[in-house]
Image 1 (cartoon, rainbow, N blue to C red):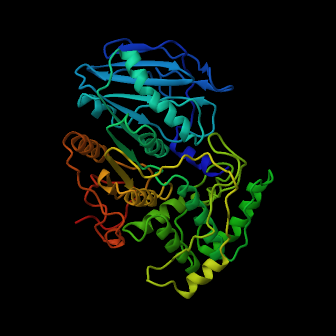
Image 2: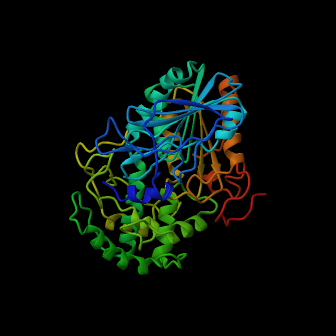
Image 3: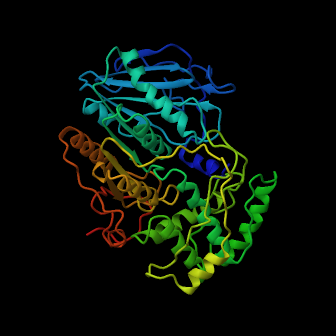
Length: 468
């Protein structure tokens, strides 16, 4: 349904694993010989899909246990899985949900960023390839939850406590899973997550319709576009860019209309905040992917370029009929803002279009979330949407959100991830809620030191003034 699914491939390796296996589950201690990679195995649940060898990384490097641990790998129900158990296991299990992997038909499993930290602290972990690719959150939820029983079956041990975590789309999987299976998990840590569910797709729509309106260029929104629509969109964008001062592959030199567009995107992506100018330049200098790799990144996310993709129903799920776009922070809209809203293209969703599981904001367990404030791919506003919904249901005491001063997507240092995980574990164990950032306070978010409290180390492309 959305060109976004092509752009999401920025998060995945350029090559699909060249080798895989369909052998039964195996347990490999750290001292065992490295496994030999086999060819991908046909999926037993998804016709046309292949399942890559869980004993090998995408580049063909063998997957082996860390010192002092044992790994279990295998393929079941069309999914590849990995499990790692420390020799001195503390009885706890972390389920890791991976992010978006494109539309390819080979699924593969990968390791969490905190793998070594989990093992060092005595935590076992488990991860699934999921049975499908695409933005298929529901499949990710089903296959991630299944790891709990699979862990018990494969290791012969039942986890006394289970935590859930995931990056990007994996954050969406995490948010849905803890609401669907509230008794299965003791805590959750979604990172750079799509916690606003379909609001992410509305954000992509917003960025493009406001750019066109401010540039004075008429655009269309096809529900079933012709095969040459990417060419049509490219032509429309070629008229928009010079009027905004955006150049492909280079930092923007914004016109007055372009500066207004930047202000609109800032407010739609999380509000006035430090470092936004560098984030805006970073994401506009980045290129979209084929077939729109000649366009700036944000213009490669135009909804409606394709008819459907795995995990998303054909049709449009975006809706801006009642969105009022702001470029200023005054109490009352300006005359220019009224003119913008009168001229912007309005889009309604296709009746019955579904496929993006909703996160209601009803966590039953502690949730510690983390997000880059300069991320314009999965924007910081996802955290604010989730926080509002959690507050609406009277569960704010179960949510802590931390802002990180980075401009990339899932651009976290090891120290940031480790501190967040350790604080979540302490929260689960003691009931003492850790500190976080007041992300729903516009004054706090706009403060010069916003994001400083939990940023550890340096982040590429961040050019705002340093923290005190």
